[in-house]
Length: 259
Ligand code: CAA
Image 1: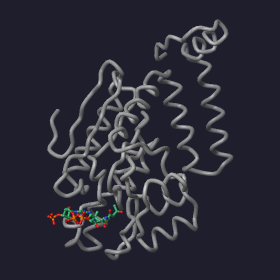
Image 2 (image 1 turned 120 degrees about the vertical axis):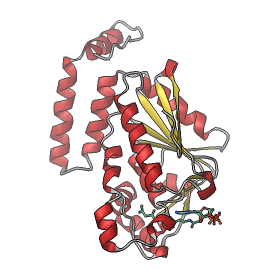
Image 3 (image 1 turned 45 degrees about the vertical axis):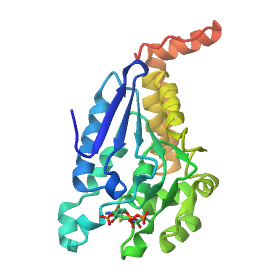
């Protein structure tokens, strides 16, 4: 399948896929067409038994500079409500397979929100994050007020959302927004390496681990602990759990079957 606004590439031997946002002329601004393609591609990869982990990236200058302002600018409140363009972003949140973001340059507004929908975030030294919507008279609309606050805490999220200030990769790391920083030549290869590592793990356990971690966002701590515990017990029904524990005892490398 070829797309107009994204590029999808598979590395079959390692069971990973790379999805690249590709509207460089507008710093990968996320218009409706791009988001439709992105969600379709991600959902397809999520169902593909030959893919265990996905890398989402942009280019060196921009991961994405936000929702497409020019596309939205003429819309009315009712028009925005009826087209409800950010509702379908929930489909990204619902992906079962882990998504590693490889971020360089701008990750602003919807770009930062898209990064926060990913499970692990690798940044280049040039990455800049922010929710600058306040500067164009709106607020984050695709989860920023919720996810940034959970990621870095109330007072810090409040400052960034109310001022629209950009933070660099160092500050993002210090605040706990991202996992690590690499020189620009290496951020993508590091993300691929990490994705390959995750793709080599037992897929059922990976899926339930992701689901359990994300559960933190859905409800109370008690609900989350309950959910995690049940998923842990459920993994004792898999061959991979038997294999993993047996291999540990026998001091050998496990061989995963995905069952
Ligand atoms: N939407 C549409 N076009 C955008 C865009 C966006 N979010 N961001 C950049 N562009 C376009 C610019 O209009 C420009 O196009 P032209 O050459 O046709 O003029 C091109 O990309 C390059 O941008 P700049 O010339 O502005 O590049 P710069 O290096 O001088 O500045 C920047 C870079 C600081 C990121 C600046 O482009 C900028 O501030 N962009 C907007 C950031 C923003 O406000 N994002 C939030 C959007 S709203 C949102 O995302 C809502 C939500 O919650 C989902």
